[in-house]
Image 1 (tube, rainbow, N blue to C red):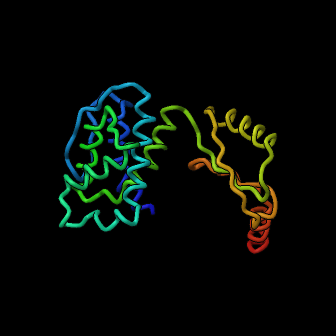
Image 2 (image 1 turned 120 degrees about the vertical axis):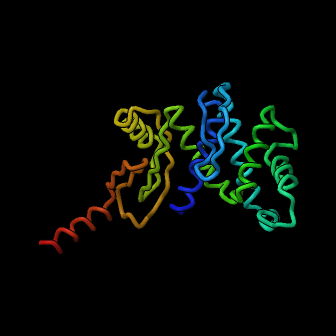
Image 3 (image 1 turned 90 degrees about the vertical axis):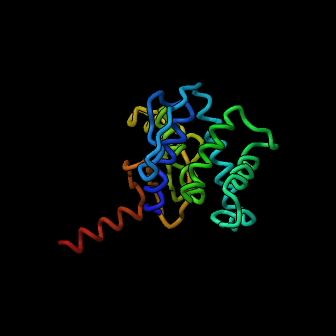
Length: 205
């Protein structure tokens, strides 16, 4: 998974730049050697591009589409047009369809279409950073109440200096407490974590 993330990162950044996040010349990938002028458009394009990448990612994971990706008998242009139609709701092409087609061609030419799910995920990370939103994973032994979620959100926003979106999960193996993750920021307040740390300390004594 880490290797896929590394390979996908430059493509995600290229899509992000093309959505209007930057007005500078952006490399479309270190292994392509191509560059394109980023389109300094409205910030609302970030939402549209995020949705497009999400739908395109879902399309390449469709069991009916998987055999077509990388198939030498399927012309790249035909596959790209097919994916573009699937990725645009109701078959109606978005105003930025030309840019999206170029981006899909870039991936197809370099046999990277299968990385679309990872690219879409990393695009959302870049978008959240630009919008100063922190997507925080909270794993707790029991489901958080609305009051607990609100208090935790307030504390994290004060700590991180960002707007926080909580993504709660339940893991009963934690026994009690919760684990909070945001990038490299991790707080393990679970009872299981405390027991494991105590056991490690006893073994080292």
